Amino acid sequence: MIRPGSRGFALIAATLTCAACGSGAAPLPDPPVVRSRDGLAEMTLTATRATDGRHAFAFDGQDVAPTIRIAPGDTLRIHYVNALPPAAPRAILAAPMNMSNLHFHGLSVSPDRPADDVLEMMAMPGEALDYRVAIPRHHLPGLHWYHTHPHGESHQQVLDGMSAALIVEGIEAYAPQVRGLRERVLVIRASDIEHDPHAAAARARVEVDRASCGESHDPVERVFTINGVLRPEIAMAPGERQFWRIVNAAADRYVDIAIPDQRFEVVAYDGQPIADHDPAHPTRLVDHVLVPPAGRVEAIVTAPARGGRSVFRTRCVDTGPDGDPNPAMVLADIATAKGAATPATSATVVSRPAPPSRLIDAQPLEREPPAFTLVFSEDRRGFYINGLKFTADAAPMVRAKVGTYQHWLVVNDSRELHPMHIHQVHFLAFRENGQAIADPRWLDTVNVSAGGSVDVLMDFTDPVIRGMSVFHCHLLNHEDKGMMAKILFE
Ligand SMILES: [Cu+2]
Image (cartoon, rainbow, N blue to C red; front, top):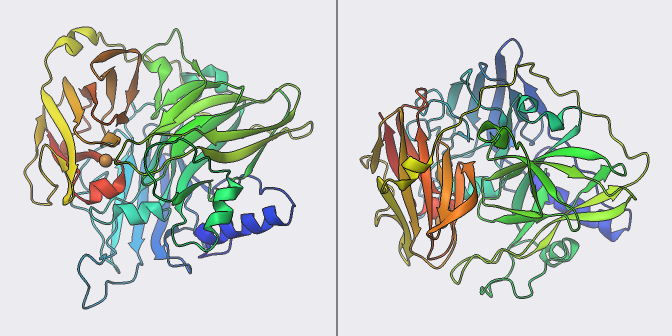
C-alpha cells in the first residue's frame, strides 16, 4: 500500500525488502485516473514535499499523480497549488526557490496563459496557478505527459518524480489493432540512488550491467522504476496481446527498451500515430526502441504462447565520453501464466470515423536549405544553444510563421548525447548525421548523437499554436544550466 508522503524511496525500499524475503516482485500498479466528463477534465494538484524530502505531486490524499484522459475538443482545468516550503531567508547561492509550474509535454495547444505557458506562469511557494487547456478538435490521439518546468529547478523536481501520463483518447481509430486489448500505462522514472543507503541492493535488484557500456567511470546513480516501483511484475496470459503506453519520464536518462525474443508492434511515437502519415502501414515491428528522456512509445506487446517468465529491459545506452552512465538493467518482470489474463480495460472509447490522414509531400521541403541551425554546446561554465545561455528576458532566438513548415538542422557540438525538444510542435526527423533516415518519424523529442546532427521538418501549421514558447535539451540538468531558447510562433 502506498503511504502518503513516501512514494519514491519507500516503495523502492519496500520492493527490496520484499525481494529479499523471497516473496516475489510487486505487481505493476496503475496510477489513479482523471477523465473528462461532458467535455471537461478537472482536478486540483499540489506540489509538496514528501516525508523523505523529495518533491512530489499530491493528488486526492496520496502522492501519486493521476493519468489524465481527455478527448479532442475537451478542456483540461487544473488548479495547481505550490505548497513547497519557501526558500530559506538567507538563501545560499543557487539554493532552490521552490518555484513550480506545469508543462503539458506533447500537447498541440496554445503556449499562452492560461494553457501550456512555462515562461509567464510561475507559482512561488504559497501561490497557485489555474490552468485551462483547450484540446483542439483536430488534435491527434496519443500518449503525452505533464511535468514541472521552472527553469533552473526543473531537473530536481522531475528527478524526484513530479510527472504523470496524459492521454488524448481515440487512438483505436488510427490503429484498430489495439481495440479490446488490455491497456497499460508505464511511466518510467530514473530514481536517484546517489545517497541511498540501499543503492547497492537496488543496483543488484535490477541487474545493472555495467560491462562495456560507455566511457564514463562514474558510479551508476540511477535505477529505473515503473509507476513508482522498482522492477515490478507485469502479468500476461500465454499469447496475450497487451497495449503498452510507455513514457520515459526520467529527468536525465535514456532507455533503449527491449523484450528478449519479442518484438514491439509500435503504433505511435511521441503521441503521433504512425497511421496519421502512413495509413496503409499503421504499425512497425521493432526489436528495441531508443527512447530519449521525455519520449514516448505506444506498442502492442505479445506474451510468449508457451508461458513462462521474461523481462522488459533497457539496453546499454552509450551517452558519449562526457555523458552519464546509462547501463543496461531490468525494468520489469513479465510473468506469463494461465489465468493471468486480465480483463480488457473499459477505456473510454471515443467513437470517431477514421480520421483524414495528415499526408504531406515532405521531400521538396526537406531539400530546402535549413531555415535555422541549432547548435548544442557545453563547457565548464554551462550549456548553450548557439553559444547562448537561456535568460528570462531574452528575445526569441527564432521566429516561425504560423502556417508554414521549416527545415531545421540540429547540431550537437559536444561529446555527449542531447535530446532536442520543442514545446507544442511536432517535427519529422528525416536525416541523421547527414544520412537519410529510412523510416522517418514524427516526434517532439529527438536524440542528437555526440558530434552528430539531425535534420527535422518543423510543422508550424497549427493555427492554435501561436505565441512565445521554448525549445531545449531534455536532459533537464542541461536545460536548467542554460540549454534552452525562445521561439515566437507568429
Ligand atoms: Cu543536453
